[in-house]
Image (cartoon, rainbow, N blue to C red; front, top):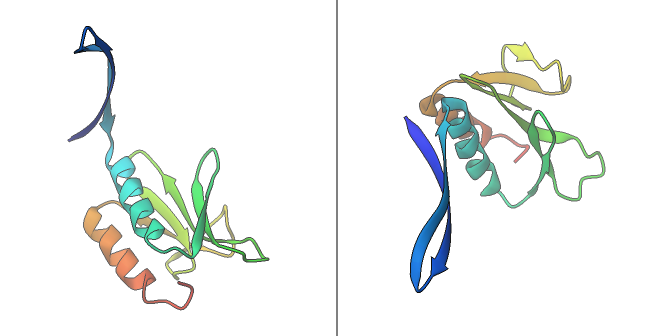
Length: 120
């Protein structure tokens, strides 16, 4: 299990004093989401767009403004909508395919295939 800890600290009389601590349990999908974002952001050709229920990436300076890849974290998995063909068409983005990722190994496999495609 992984946690994210955020603390607010103030220096009083040259000593740090903790004002508040926030601990959040990271679900597997949040961890997968972070790893996926890190991987995509290594590619400088993309711009990030955040929406309420998902985040996506488009090719910079592309006139069509279509997403190349969309990340949708859910409770126990990460849904990736991309141009990588899979068994399911995306309902949200009909020009993309939908892949459900539940493990880090599946995520690495997905991006191994994705990075070798022409749309990168």
